[in-house]
Image 1: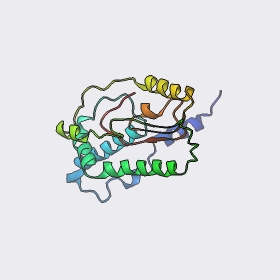
Image 2 (image 1 turned 60 degrees about the vertical axis):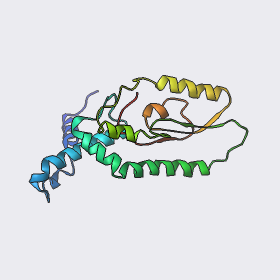
Image 3 (image 1 turned 180 degrees about the vertical axis):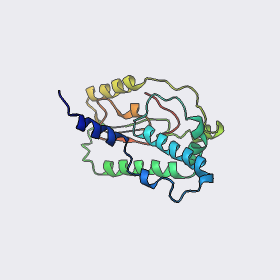
Image 4 (image 1 turned 90 degrees about the vertical axis):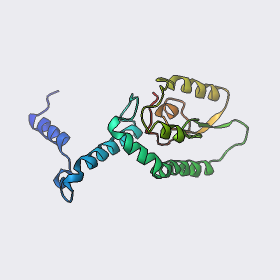
Length: 184
């Protein structure tokens, strides 16, 4: 394939272009710049974790421990969690359940139906105990067995992408926030 050099140049330029760069430095207090910069980096890190762009990380980066602690305790974590729950509830209320005893909804346990917030506060939102690194195949096998037994998985809710990805995952999945650890 012969790609024109002009196209490659434009493509590379677009990759490096940030439409917000023209606003950098406007209205900022330079004395707060390093703290603000760290918070922005941590917000980007948390977003990348939640949308599954960042994988295989083991613990909160040291420069984000305070940021994550504030996020978890300030009420924002609770608001993010409640939004996911509200969407799941709305979806569930709209279902036409057959009622044959073979209807299922998958819930992850930790950080979905039970909170470990107290534990994370005790360790100051630092590195948690080791978590298993690959449980997705087990979760897929369990969901497959449910479907083989005739169950219909209407929904699936979890705090890890390994909880809700891989077929069968259910008719609809819901990811709740968890910036504390990653399980692949």
